[in-house]
Length: 101
Image (cartoon, rainbow, N blue to C red; front, side, top):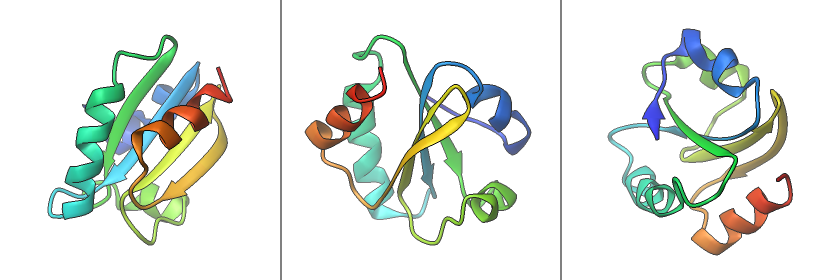
């Protein structure tokens, strides 16, 4: 799981299944979500998890209408498949991911 720069976003999501965590370092719920994502990372074949710091990537936050964090998005081959705002329980997150594998 890595924090990516705004300039790398499109190339990171263009292939495969990608879960994007839009977060901020000062956000308590984002830190809680990070623990859930750490549990998932590497456990689902074919899934890449990336993180976008909304304070560092304001244009991406605007592009996707991020008004609350954490916001998680699932992309498949560059296409937005699902968006979730707020904490996502591990099992619910996994269920959503599995729909697109």
